[in-house]
Length: 319
Image 1 (cartoon, rainbow, N blue to C red):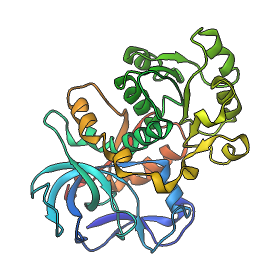
Image 2: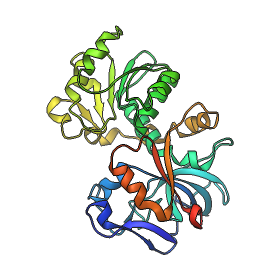
Image 3: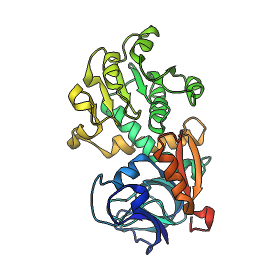
Image 4: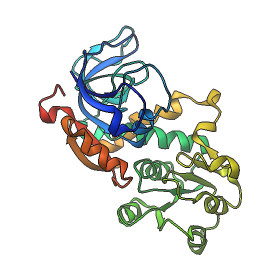
């Protein structure tokens, strides 16, 4: 099968290559799918640079949709031929989702009405957003500010919070301003003067703040928006600046209390909402597997404006 992977750590454009590898076999508790679509994300490039180091070679592409073609021992909740979406087992396998076939460690049924391409855009954005909102303790009584609501994770977080009944203030550029307003969020522009613009809304301080925007020096202003309480602010992006400000960040949340339910428990609910057109992760562009470098180039600009997906079957692959 074809797969995009790296054999040493370094810059993604330098170490990644499309090559042929054996079809992986699912271990107990795993399944293998013929990949229909695979999502790419900045996290993939961080893996190439050495995040979560492990055995090499290693593949890229965590978000996957496809059709089940092999089942590991102990798996009873799916069958050969089922349509599923989920996450590639990138730590234990020498390839991941950017391939003709992939082994998944978490998977969920794709409901009727949701096509496999849109399903592949869901996993990382949905799991990251839902986990961080759970960490913040979001309830319907809260006012939540989402900084970077135009990112896939931020856009997902806005929708999850609104479904949960919270009031949402979203920072975004022009690309998604109207869509976010249509969803029910109050939208303000990001950048310098954000705290003042939020104050001018007359909604009071935000109870909770989720920062999904690329690092830009916004954290001090976000703390001000949270009434000066840094522990009400959680960032998944500005990991360098967070500790000195007392802001919570992804990697310093207590790992002993992290659960699969926080990350994946919302998948069936929001997959069904996606099938009904009530939840979405925007897709910027799709590419055949052979054109993976073009997707990489766009992603590295930081201005993809949505999910970038590889479609292995588009150029004759096994998806």
